[in-house]
Amino acid sequence: MSFHSMQVAEGLSTESSIVVETIQRSGMFGKLLTVERETCTSVANSLRSNGVSYRSNVSRISAATYRGKGKDGKEDSGLDIGIAPPQHAKWQSIAAIMVSEVVGAGVLTLSRKYAQLGWIPATIFIVVIFLITVYTSNMMVEVKKVFPAIISMADAADYTFGRVASSFVQVLMAIFLCTTLGDYMLLIGKSLASTLYSVHLCFPVWVTISLVALFPIMQLRTLNATTALCIMNMVSIILAVGLVIAGLIIHGRDASVETFLIAENLDFLTFMQALSAIFFTFGGQFMFYELMAEMTDFTEFPWTFSIAGPFQVPIYLIVGTVGYHYKGEDASGYFLDNLPFGWMYRLASALLCFHMLIAFLILGNVLSRILHLYFSPYRVNDLGLRGKLEWLGCTSLVIVVSFVVANAIPFFEELTSLIGGLLVPSLNMIFPILFYIRTKQMVDLKIKGWEWVVYVFLIAFGALVTVVSTYMNLRAIIDGWSTYGAPFSCHCDQIWNTCDCS
Image 1 (cartoon, helix red, strand yellow):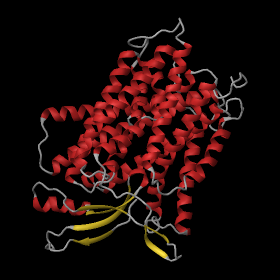
Image 2 (image 1 turned 60 degrees about the vertical axis):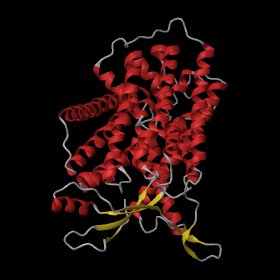
Image 3 (image 1 turned 90 degrees about the horizontal axis):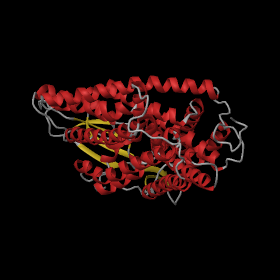
Image 4 (image 1 turned 30 degrees about the vertical axis):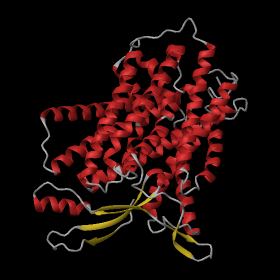
């Protein structure tokens, strides 16, 4: 995933020399970054030779230039594409980006999670998982203080545990991105079908239409207007959710609807499965290091939650509680399905479709950039014909894999929960804690007894959610195949406005 060259820092003896490497990384929104940093091996050697606390102090991050043809038709190795340089953003700007990104696909499942858990457990764990996210994010900042050249979760693994750990984290990140993009494509197809619910096409056909629509969109290699994209993304999902809430209020609550403080017949397995979907709603933490790389002072990153938290948590609570109040145990795992067919349902679906197209563009650009860096590091910043063809190949691979995931698991709630249970606890909780523990050991800082208790408890909790919820979600997916048909079957349930697909 990186292109790098190495050199020994001048003015240092051979015995204590610092080896510096220049690498390229995919930053926020797939921005191409050039990082000059001390190699992980050099850091390890310094620790072994000095035997004292150590901090990496060789680090410089800059926006990579792009090669292309200038106005005179000649090769231009420094084509200006209007990309803002990194390390210039204030924490308020990063908070605004987080606010626009946190409310997405995951929020659509929350009314169903309230139905599975009840008022008290669902509310408590939305707040608790947010607080855990804040806590482990502070740990990420502390690790970056020691190794300021960290740009990604994989970099943190490399500096703390070595290349094998870094490769493992990269694989998990790739799986997370691929499955999440599959979830996004599923939602694009479903929301498009819901917008045109009187057109009776099978679900794979709608997903194919989505695939065709995404191909030209994904050829945008640089997302210059990221602020505008974030604003449009946030406004569209808020309007879609707001329409559903308004529709529920207008139609009122049926007299037979029942809600419970703690859901009846709630068992341990159902509890863990519901938690996995809540974890998914906080899954954006995997990009926090990329966000820090954009900041003037990354140590201010924890302040972003003073803006993002008061927006994110209330939105999640409102969506979950309103859906549960009006629908009770019948609350849908796809929030829009709490509405009957009609103009409000159609408009909310169109807004959601627009939101998911932008979300796919942003996240797909990140994964495509990572693939381009891996397969062709010397051409990743080439705006010529070959560079464009390689980018087409990378984006095509991303879109096709997403298409396969969306049709293989065409159940939104189950796929979302599977991702949230299988991957998010590790990326949000287990890995940041392990990197923090290792960093403290590397700089000879003692970990107190009560800290060990907290760390072990959180790691064990994350591992338990991962194992149990993954089992339950896989069982739910298999049951879905048995009930509604195998992968790539018609799967038209709840997207047609007739009983023909019942």
